[in-house]
Image (tube, rainbow, N blue to C red; front, side):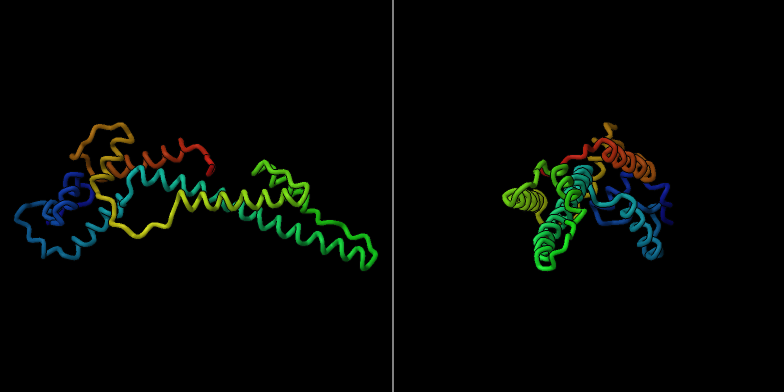
Length: 204
């Protein structure tokens, strides 16, 4: 008979991961695993799904990447808004001359200029300022790609590294006798701590 999920310890799953043999999940040594093939598949999936394949360092990197990506999204949206406003403006001025009517400039133009200054420090007053802004956005895009290049699919992180990193991050003594369900809670606490302590940094 197999152990239930709440009976499984870290030692059990470390042995499972290292040996690729599910004997550590048996409640009794004489239990023939082939009798519980379907249950064993389900149990091992529950185990690895509950832990995941990320170390705390990996999780920290993901938060950094997410924050940088959101920052980049704002800049790219702002860049599109600037292009729309400054490409629209000359056409409006042309219609003023052709139709001899008093067309108003886009009311959004002022808001866009203020947003650019707020997010980049660049004040758009003349054409050269537009180039400075576009170059700024291009630099941020290039920097993001440099910091977070597309990675080829690699082998998953070793399970032991995940476990060690959680204990280390939480300043807890390593304990392979800890129940899996307790460890999952510890890992969740570590992830929450990362989210709370992570400063909202920008890509330089």
